[in-house]
Image (cartoon, rainbow, N blue to C red; front, side, top):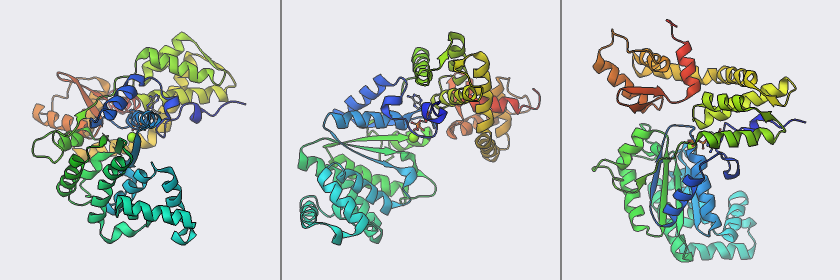
Amino acid sequence: MRQASGELFPTDSPLPASEMIGRRDDVREVATRLAAGTHLIVAGPRRTGKTSACEAALARLRRRGNYTARVDLFRVADAAELAEAVATSVIANRSAAHRALRRARAFGRAALSAAQAQLLLRLVGELGEGVELALSPGRAAQDPERALDLALELPERVARADGERLVLFFDEFQEVASARRPYGDPDAVTNRMRAIFQRSTSVSYLFAGSIEHTMRNLFAPARRAFSGFGSFYSLRAIGEEEWRRGLAERFAADDCTIGDAALGRLVELGDGHPRATMRVAQQTHLVSIELGTREIDLELVQLGFERALEGDRPTMEQVVERVRLLHKHGLLVAREVAAGRAPPRRLHPGVRDRVLKLLRDAGILEHQSRGRWRVIDPLLRRYLATLDPFA
Ligand SMILES: Nc1ncnc2c1ncn2[C@@H]1O[C@H](COP(=O)(O)OP(=O)(O)O)[C@@H](O)[C@H]1O
Ligand SMILES: [Mg+2]
C-alpha cells in the first residue's frame, strides 16, 4: 500500500507544525515576541506559509501556558459573525466553560446540566455580556456594532481574570479594508478596534494578510487607525538544504528514495515557493505510484512538474482573466516578466510602471531589485511564459 500523495505533500491547507519544512526559527521568534507583548504583522503573498507559521507559533504559545484565539476573516461574513467568532475562540481557553458553551450552542441552554448552567451564569457575571455572544448564536446580529465592541473587549477580560497573556490571531486581516466593507466602514471599524486593542494590555495581536499593500496601508501611514501598532515580520525564505532534507524525509515516509540530482531539480522547480514546491513533489509522488516505482529520478520529477502545471491550469486561467481585467496591457507585461524578456517598445515606460505596480498589488509579481521583477509563483511563471505568442 502506498501513501496518499495529497497527505504526504499537502497543498490545499495550512500545515500542522509537525509537517512544516523549515520555519523553526520563524516560529520561535514570532512566539517569543508575542509572549513578550509585541504585536506583529505578517504580510506576504498567498500560499507562502503565513497561516501555517502563525498557527505553529500559537501552538507553541499554548504549550507554554499562554491563552490563544484566532479568527480567519475569509470565513467570517459580517460584523456579527466576527463578534461571535472572536468571543467563541476566546472562551475556548477555558475548557470547562468551553464544553458547556458548545453544548448550549448545539442544543440550547435547556440541554445544560445544572452545574453547566451555573458555570455559564458565573461566566457572564465575571466576564460581562461579551460571553453572551458566544453563548447565543444570532444574538450578535441584533446590534452587530455593539456586539463587536463587546467581543473585542473579551480577550482582555479573560486574560486579566486568569492572569494569563492572550494572543489573538487575525488571519486575512486585509479583509477589514475590503471594498465590500464586510464589517462596516473600514475607517470606523479599525478606529474602534485600535481603541480597544490599545487598552488591552494583556493581549498580544498577530495579524496576517495576503494583500501586502493593503496591510501596509492599514498599518503604516500616519493617518490610519493602526499606524505604528505592531511591527512587520517577514518570514525567512526556506533554505535549499531545508527543502532537500524535508522533501527527502517525506518521500522516505513512503519508502521512496530520491537521488541528489532529482532532489535538486525538485527544489529548483519549486524556486523556494512553499506551495509550488509541495505541489510538484506531490505530483511527482503521484506519478511514482502510477508507474509502480519507489525510485524518484529526474524523469519522474519532470513528469511531476508537468502534471502540476496541468492540474493548476484552471486556477491559472482565472489569474490570467484577472490580469486582463486589471489593465489592458496587464497580460503583455505579465508575460514579459514571466519570460524574462525586455519590455515591449510600444509600451510607454510610465504605463508599464503603473501596470507593474497593479500586478504587484494583485499579489502576482514581486519587485526583486532595481528594475527587476518576477512572477511569484513559479508554476504561474511557466504558464505565462508559455502563453507567449512569440515564444
Ligand atoms: N513550512 C512549510 N513546509 C512545506 N510546505 C509549506 C510550508 N508552509 C506552507 N507550505 C505549503 O504552502 C501551502 C499553503 O500554506 P499556508 O500556510 O496556507 O499559506 P498562506 O497562509 O501564506 O496562504 C501549504 O498547503 C503547503 O503546501
Ligand atoms: Mg493563509
